[in-house]
Length: 114
Length: 116
Image 1 (cartoon, chains in turn brown, purple):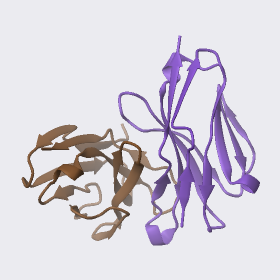
Image 2: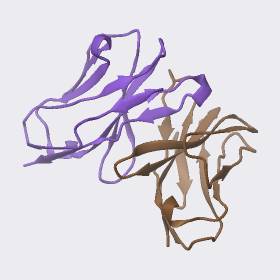
Image 3: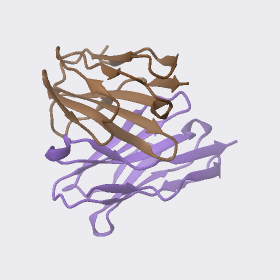
């Protein structure tokens, strides 16, 4: 089944404790990205990747890192999480860097930083 | 700059009523794509429709229909004969240009509650 998977789905952590949220897709998609969703703000893009080893900042990259060493994986790294990073995170992928292709979203990761 | 406005924060209707969700967008691009996503209480994002800027034909899919009007920069979504299962948050989104990595610019969403 074609899908985007994220792990973990739920995470409660403390300020400053490094964490990684994994994202994997099995559709051989070139384009992957991360969004965060906050109440009243909709979804905002954090980082995106047009292909392996090619990543760039989105609208709200502060406090996050990403890597794209393999085509299928695009982990989101929070080196020193803070409470303002408490949010619902979505990973997305698309066949190519072209808006005519649908973006497939993962199920979301709900992160709470205390 | 790109912007998507969903002025209706919350809408409540009784089952079987028709409801229209408004979406107004701003862009300087001549080629762009508009999307609607549904987010049910379970939290996942469900793709509903994609429309490119050159295709102004209205689209109907079952009880769902979309009205795209470039003259008013609107892409409204109508649910006919609403059902309880339609209760969700609905997002309108606009594709960004290459400089933004084709990010989707989302509106803030409209929360629809359909009661029996």
